[in-house]
Image (tube, rainbow, N blue to C red; front, side, top):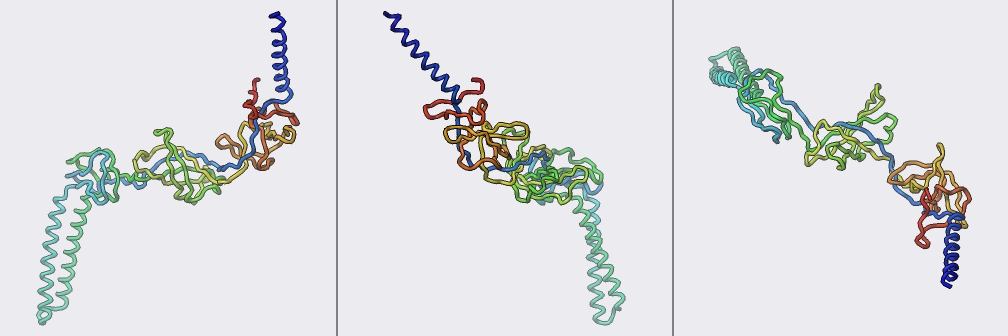
Length: 348
């Protein structure tokens, strides 16, 4: 009695399993979604080098001994601040002598002017004394300029390089004393092939990444485009400006650059929906009676897991997005989602 009761149950389960297999065999289970509009952009990738916004090497203008240095390693210095002072004892003495001669010459000129007014001095004598006074003033000005050359000031605010020289050292003309860099923002220079020039414009945004900061993007804008294309590389140099308030970016860094252009809204489908054969692409469109039609499409950019559709589809059409591997043109399919079913995997 017990055996005969179990047998109908076994046959019933077998029949159900067979029905399910038959259902999957006749109509593959797939997922379909309507075409959607998505924002696409063309992307230009390049490699660039970072430069300081402003940078200058301060050198000794004359051969002289350093008497004072007013900066430390990597310190900040303001515009006009004294960076270094060279010995100026001889020049100071020359200034005093020139100043004394200029004062004497002016006083003598005043006396001659008074005598000439009373008729006791000639015009020639006054002219000669005027020339002497001017010469003495010029010598005094030269001495002051010579002293000024021995006081080296920062031409702009920035950060000073590591100090490689000490007070008391005798430097020759042209010896580097300090390098000042304004890194409040960074100039990023990169090259782009001339064929992509039409995609670039001043004011266009860029994204840049440095190997020193993986995962962090630096955003800037194109400030200028070199008007000359290199005849050797057939490329043009583009300069972008990147804000650098935390001074994370350093001059000399190598950075990868991405420039997005030609923003547009286009029809899109997931990448898994597109089947490629040679240089052609196809999708399966779900039509009446849940039958699929193999449809040729012209694709554009790929971005964020989606493919831009330029031709072949219309808005709202349902396209198979999962389970395309086992499909053929005209096949009837079962759509997933109605009862929590999922599409069959490629290996099922």
